[in-house]
Structures are given as structure tokens and as C-alpha cells.
Length: 137
Image (tube, rainbow, N blue to C red; front, top):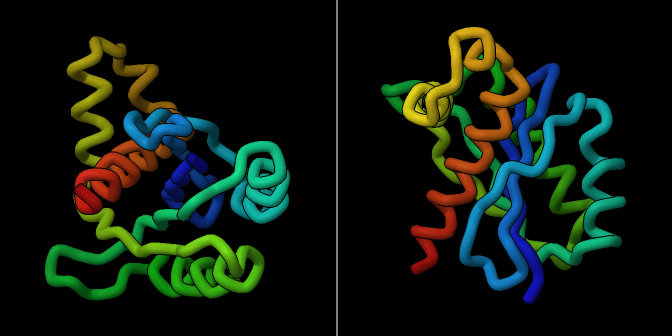
């Protein structure tokens, strides 16, 4: 089986998470600069075929667009163009950053480690991917 990949997109950084080949466990993969995302994904897809991509769609609590939503919509369009054989799914990402911080606290990470935005982005992508996995069951 091919892997599933999740994206937590931000203007500067993008958190990535991936499943194992059996699509059972979501694991943090990497954090890349947003301008390097497509090149990274193309190289990764050549090494590890992707079955689907789940992209966190940022919305407010009132289900309105955020300052990042339009960029994510553009990214989704670009991914569908660049990876025509890989389905791209939008996943509600409300509360993922808060959940990531809570996960870091529960894991016993210190305050300095919890301030590392790259770690928060990877954990957020993992939460998005886990949510996507659960929605498919």
C-alpha cells in the first residue's frame, strides 16, 4: 500500500506527517519552508508513492476564512495539478495547534521546546492525518 501524507500549511513553514505503508499510524515527517514544499513533495512521492494527500483547511470557529485560507485553497489547486493521480482531501484543522500544544505538554516537553514552531507544525500535521485516518474508518 502507498502512504497517506498530511499538510499543515503556513505562510512560512509547512508541517508534514505521513502514515506507515499499511496506513495505520500517523507520524510527524518534517517541516519545510513553504516555498520548498512542492519540490519536497515531488521528491518524496518518487521515493514513497502517495495514495492521498490530506491538507488542513484553516477556518475560524464561525467557519469563516482565515488569513491563510486563500493560500491553502491555492495550494490544493496546485497539488491537484502537480499530482493528478493522487487525491487531495481538505480536512478541518480547527484546534490542531491547540491540540499540538496540549500533546507537547502531555509528553512532558519543556516550555522552550513547546515554543519551537516547527515542532508544533509537525505535530499539527500528525493530528490532521490522524483525523483523516479516523474519518475513513
